[in-house]
Length: 343
Image (cartoon, rainbow, N blue to C red):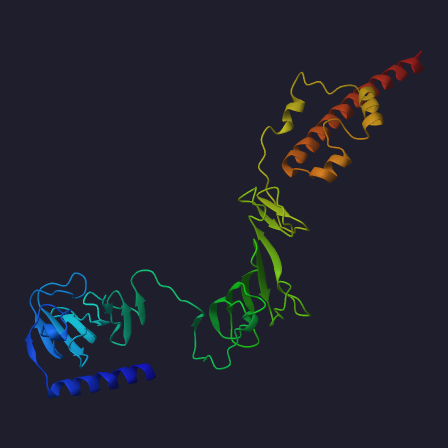
């Protein structure tokens, strides 16, 4: 609000001063200097030259010039007769000095590059250098701390600390006003590691690189951590070997694994399950079932749940065939015993 008041006072002063010796005349070239006939005053133009890009037809020009007419230093405002856009420049001794469009307010709304539909409306790309702060509410910046990204406002914040701060890494935070929580934060440590925090209270944020101290809430979330395997995600590991690698426990209500070639073929006619004697010999030598990985292989490579479930089912089905065969043999033996008893 203070800036708006100062600009209004300056504008009133300029208009008051100019009105004393104001000149209203036709002037097409806004880049003229004093010794070419340019003087301070209000002007109209029919064919604008050295006006804002695209200017044509009738325009207004307010020109406040330097007292020495052999230079081209002036403060100028210009605008078309036919819209509400206003342009400003200081010529800086250059007749072709670029014009800057003045931000205009309409019905309490500010628009840049367009007529505003919202309180602040931008048409095009927006950029903020330094700290960006968006807040729901009227919490001021007086008690606001950016040190080490210690954010305490009711806000959505995007922070990039400067190099003088220990933790000079970008942070994205969503949280309410108070002691810092509950909140959701993302931060990076300058490498390819992304840190995720979801805290119920203010965390210490004194790393190395983040989350050190008694209230440590940051945990590592690796995205594309292994640059040789782009697209892989690791949780608790910096070297994901699959699309998702987790170094730790996983809890879920249900896990669905898609599989093909389900081993119902074991029960098809003609499938040979082999002899139990051969199976016994294999187990004695290898210490595991045929086709199944050894303990050493599992320790080195893990197991694929889908493939392992298929393999286990295959072994269960083969075991079922063994049991059925043994049952048949048992019945045959019982029949023979019964016959011997009769004899």
